[in-house]
Image (cartoon, rainbow, N blue to C red):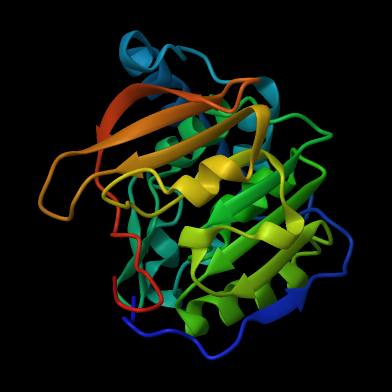
Length: 245
């Protein structure tokens, strides 16, 4: 991610009907991927507290066409349960991690969600299959533009994307029922806690680029304080600040 402050926020509205094609040649590959995710959830359930992911999460993982969110040369590997490079030094997360993060926040159909770190747009698409509205922020302009275009082509009208520094969240759209952060800051950003509704949940990887990062589940209490629970050690790209912080 570049270390500069974008002069302005690019706001991109996505206005087509939601949903991926019902049938395609890769449906079998997605089904195998979902089976691998389910098996891995069982294996890690003792650590995550989630030995079985919710039906809505698994349905979304089985529907969203992951091959559309990776570069052409990576399409053959799109349904393998591993991260893949997407350009600009960034990656698309391992499908299991996408499913785990989505499950941990207990997203509901009426929820409004903030995603920090659009990347390829894959996590936003998975969330958009489940919730009412997704706001997603990406600091790398080329990635953000590509993701917004693709999400529009796939018909996700309940996603709004912009280019900007996600550390400060999206105050104009706050508060959020759920926040999903897909890049790792050194500590949980206070602006994101502030923009979470009481009773809301945030999943975020925390740790330095050379440290063992931890995937945290943050829950905001009614009095504005927050609880934090560790789930798994993870490896995410760093959360880049607009001013290079």
